Structure formats: C-alpha cells, structure tokens
Image (cartoon, rainbow, N blue to C red):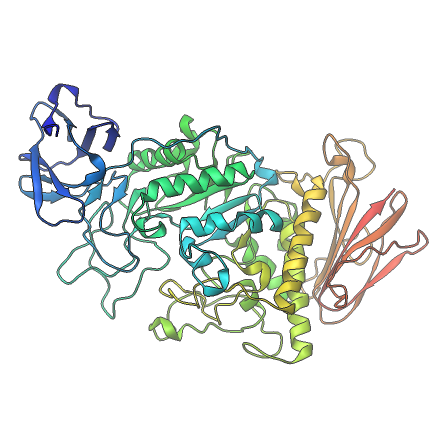
Length: 598
C-alpha cells in the first residue's frame, strides 16, 4: 500500500476545493484565520480520524492554503479542514459526506473527494436559441417522489432522467432544476451552528421544519447527495442526467442561490464550475446574485443566464413575476389591465410564467380565492397575500359541472396567454395537468404530497395536458411568436401593416378604457424572418358577457385555430371562416386565435 504523504512542491493554489488525479489529491482553501492548517482524513463513514496532514507553511498565497497529497485512495476517504485547531468550512467542496439520506442532519464540516473522470463521450450542448426556449421548472425530489410518478428512482436525479420522454412529448426544451446544490434541508442538531459559506445565523424560533425548497446555506459547488442514489457519487449521477438530456436534444439549467456575503468572486467561480464540470446550459441566479458580473464573464458567454434584473439580448433574460401578476389580473376580470396586457404580449427578453414555486399553481389559481397555509404552522402569515386568483364560484375542489367547465376554460385562457406572448414561456412542473397544492401558496416546508407533483390520471388532467401540448406545438409552428426582442409596432419592411398592432372590438382602434376587458392583437407574418409566417389575430374577452369583434382584412381567409370556449373540442379548432364573414362573437371569458390562410 502506498504511503500517504504531502508533496509540497506540487501544490497549487487554484482551483479552490479538492481535485482528484489518480492517487493524488490537490486541495486548496481560503481562510483568514492564523495558525497551523490541517487536512483531516477519515475512512468513509467513520468518525475517528485516520490521519492529519499539515499544510506546508510555504504553500500559502494570501489567505489561500494549498498542498498535494499522494498515495491516497480518494474514494475511501472523507476530509475536513482546520486552522489553529478550529474547524474551517470548505465552501468549494465538490461533494458532501454523510448527507446522502434526505432529512438526516449529518455533519456539515465533512466532505468527499470528487471522482477523477467521467466519460462525456460526444456530449455537446444542444444550443437552442433563447427565443425558441421553453422552460420546465421542477424540484428534483418533488417531481417524481409521489407514488403516481411511475418511475423507479423516485425523488432523484435518476428519476428526472426517466421522465425525459415525457418532457420531449410535452414540447419543452429546457429543464430548470430548483436548487440542486447540497443544501441543508434538515434542521441543525441541538448546539450545532450553521456552517459553510452561508449566513451563520441561528434558525428562527419555533418548531423546526424541513427546508424542502432549498433556499439557505448550502455547498454551492456540490450536487445534492440525497438527490442521488445512495452509495453512488452524486456528481457522477448529475453528469449522467445532463448527458442524457443532451442526447435527447434537451437542455438543463440550474438555479443557484447565493446568500449575502457570498461575493462576486465566489459566485463566478461557482458558475464556472457548473458550466465546466457539469456542462449545464443555463443558470438562474437567485438570492444576492451579481448578474452584471455573470454577463461580463467570458467563460459564461455560451450559457443562458436568468435573474431578476437580467438584460443580455440573445443569451439572457429577466426573471420576474410581473407577467404572472398582470395576466392573472386580466384573467380574473380586473379593471384597468389592458395597457399592461399589451406590454406583456409584445415584449421579449424575459421569462414568462403564469405560476411559479412561490404562489399558487395554475390549478389553484382558478380554484382558490385565498391561501390555505395552515399546515405550515405560521397561522397563515406566510406566503404571498396577493395571488390575483379567482375560484370560479366555490373554494377548493368541487364536482359542479359548471364550475369545472369554467375552471378548464380559464386554464385554457392562461395557456394561450403564456404561449402567444413574446418572451420565454416557463411551466411549473405539473401545471400542464392541473397539479394542486390544495391552496398552499408557500409549500417551502411541505415534503409530502402537498409539495410533490401528483401525476394524476383521468379526464380533466388529460384535457388540460392535451391543450398545453397543442399550444406549445402551435408556438413552435409560428416564428412570429418567437421573435426574441420587443416588437416595434412599426412597418419597417413596407409590408402594409406593422409587425405587431393592438386592436379593440374594431380593427385598428384599441380601447384602453379602464372598464373594458377585451383586446385583440395582430401579428403580421411577413416580419417572421427568413421564412414568412401566417398572420395571427389573437382576441381576448375576459368580460363575463359576450363581445363581438370585427375582423381585420387578410389575404385569403381566417381559420380558427383556438377557441377556448369550445368545451366539446377542448378549445382546439380548425374551422375555416368564409371570406365574407366580417365579425366574430367571443363567449364570456374566452380567447380565440385566428390564422390566415392565403
């Protein structure tokens, strides 16, 4: 057996963290503490220290200590760090140790050495243009943990991999994984402080709860061990997931959450790590994220970037809830919404969603007037107070046919809003088949069927899913809906009409009166790009009374592609209108899409 020893002359200060090369490990960490720095080695799963190695005093660059250790079997050891006898967190650790079982606290200062190699084969990023991207946001555990998910490896990276055929059939292009880093979901043991590069604050008073969502202290460089199969390297399993997505023409984005104090240098190192080591295609920066620095970093130039204040043209987009709030108000019939609706329809460079992790699901958006967060144990004081929802006549689950028909119609309307607007559509996992959280709009601690996706079977979920798939395919078929930037509302090609125009019940006369709830939009297909598109006329009537819309002239005739009021056909239509027809009546709370047939 080779002797474990320090190779001082081969040490290197970068990159930070531990790196494996055969029987050697390079390790570097930063600490402003003074005193003797040590690397403590432990046999896998054992508490007793096997060996302590001192960092050579000469191997120091500023506050960075570094060394190379030879003769070690990295897969048999775990490690921790100390300076002057005080344990030091390795914020750059690539893998955690002892936390591969969900909900078990484990030690927060013990780490594993990463695997040396992974066979990426011919892996290549799909390179889908930002304007063609459709995001599917999921929680790795919650996506497949429910018994109805039908996968073998429930609640894991492998479980997500098993759902690739489903995601392809649905028509999405990118999965956004909600905080896949090794966060601390279990409450800390008594007397144990938060460690790592987090806030270092003690947990809030009151009963300890599971941090199901993952926002808080974490090992930002390490995939979450309990999202992997036990006994296997979580980093390898995450790479297998990304590789499989790429082989199927799909992309993977990760949500990385940063706390105050995790500065720009740390953040950029972290983003580069996920891009280089794990081949991710996109990053959603959350928390105290430095979006400007990320946009300017050359390593990240080929990666899609998302954050609340992002504006990066063809590779970055803002990620806010303004689309959701504006369009929900319009959907439920609020006054004075029309100018906001017109803005949301024509403006690109942003991520659009009707529901996201924080707030009601789409099904709950049409089923509840108020939040029902009693199970969170905070007396209903948590979660958003404004959901801009409407229960369609009764709170919660019902069997009344009229209410269910109205809810289905409202969901169809919402899918039309999402797919015909410029920007990048985002779907919250399960919304495509009516997943419910039973009125809980803040399921941050609900590691149970409330927070999991329930893969329902039956007529109603099937209808919602069918319409969602149809609208995503409709969007793919019409490049005018995927222009990317903000439409100009001008005829810059001499086509005879502008690229985008707003109309009222009469063509070319938008009516923005505060009491009105009906509006129409014309997308001129001649502005689609290299290949001309059909003209699209989209009419919204969110009033509780019918309204007649006069039709604009088109070359040929109009065909009804969508009419959300048609319950019997689930809103999907193919009726060709007579060229002589000059008017179309829209039922209450409905949307209609006309496609020109030249």
